[in-house]
Length: 68
Image (cartoon, rainbow, N blue to C red; front, side, top):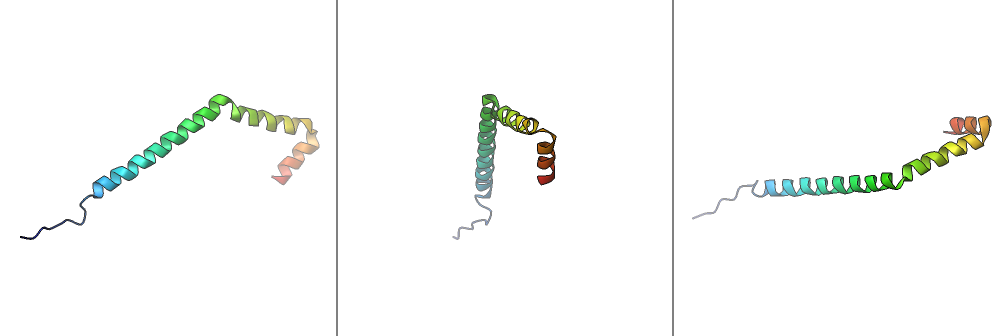
């Protein structure tokens, strides 16, 4: 009596594992992003960048635009 194994045996388990790991990574990344937003990190960077352009005047703003 021979035991015939299908080549696709366990494939669904591996696919569920991969999808599960991807979902965990996405949820973790969204959690970290939400933490940074609630800490005000992005607002602080935006304010710092805006004040940098404003304090240098027109010539500083033109230099930022041209050197971008």
